Length: 190
Image (cartoon, rainbow, N blue to C red; front, side, top):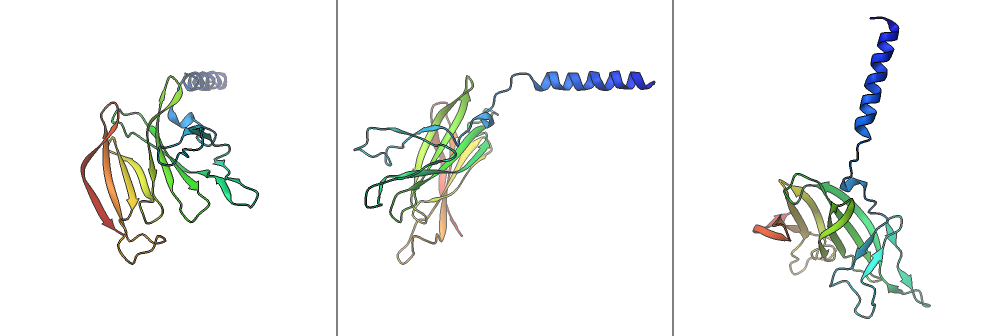
């Protein structure tokens, strides 16, 4: 094979590969979860505040403070975004974990599950988590086409909020409209 033939072959391969890579391919990983508007979960929404949503910018919504420096409105921070098939359809969803700055010693969080429909993120499920050892988020992940949520606790007398001694594990399956717990809750020592 002559040098010019090799060059033509390489150029043809490069053009073919770039044509395939430019086909429209939207997936949940293209969503910028650090700059998105989220709904408050019912138990964390302030009944005095008519805003039912909040917007993260660069992964945070700073808390607002009053004249004395105390927090008026909670702050929110992006903790993590994980991807996996939690609906059993073979397509990845996003598992978004946020942390809440309350102004007190509590550190609750929120878990959101998003899918992509018509190139837009659609919320499938949300759940607030408790505070550190008292139902605080231990882990959340996709497994075998389902969702696994692990929360710290339950606490027992004499155990502090700082240090979880065990966590609970719940498995969920998607039924087309919502997540439904499957099997029994497990308690796992740390």
